[in-house]
Length: 79
Image (tube, rainbow, N blue to C red; front, side, top):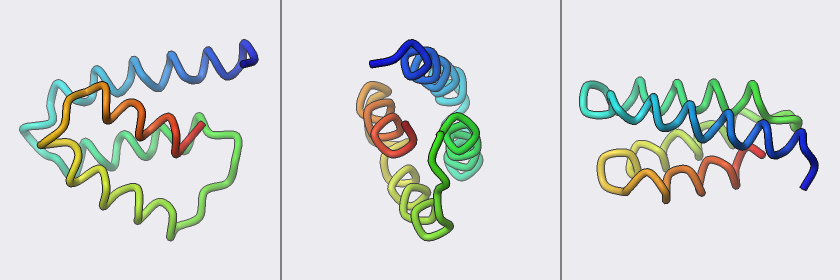
């Protein structure tokens, strides 16, 4: 793991912690915000189809899963 990867991962995980505090207010908004941050930290170009798949998965994960599982999912898909 490069230092760049570690910094991006820590930034993404910190942002997820902050965003998931408000997950009860709007699951859709939380999912969109996580995707926006993930896309901005990703070195790879992510297609609209992939974003739609990630969004749909986040919509089901956010209300039901703990933060650790959501972090793992997001890191695997964006970094």
